[in-house]
Picture 1 (cartoon, rainbow, N blue to C red):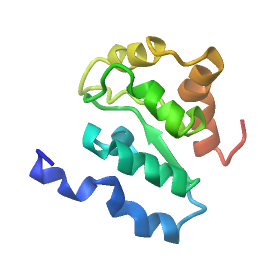
Picture 2: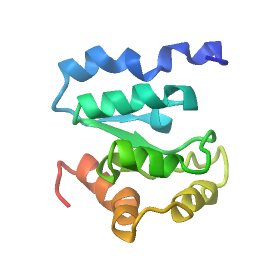
Picture 3: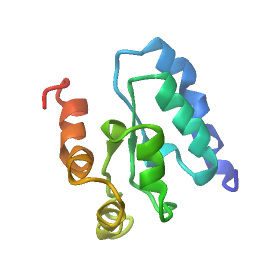
Picture 4: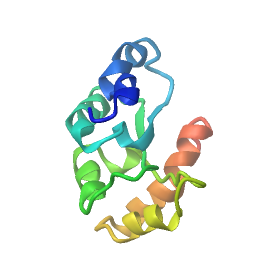
Length: 122
C-alpha cells in the first residue's frame, strides 16, 4: 500500500489464476509481499492447496516464520534468498533463529523445493 508501483502484486489479484490453474504449483514471492498482506496470503494458502510461499525479501520480522508455519504449515514454505539484493545469510538466520523443528527446517530449505520443482517426488 505504500508503494504504488506494486499495487498489482497483492495476493488477492492471483485468485482467478489459482482457480483456473488449480493443479499447477504457484509460488507467492516474498510470502505475499508485505506485512499488510499476511491475512490475504494465509487465506489464499488455506483456500488453494497449490499455493506455496517463498521467503525472499526484506520485510520479515521476528516471529513471522512461526506465524506462517502455524497458519499455513511448513509444507508450503520455501527458503529463498533474493541473492544479489542482499546477503542471503539474513534469510538463513531468519529460519535458523525461528522455533521451527529441524524436520520443518529441512522441508523449508530442501524438501518443499524438490516437491514443487520436481513433480512431487521427495
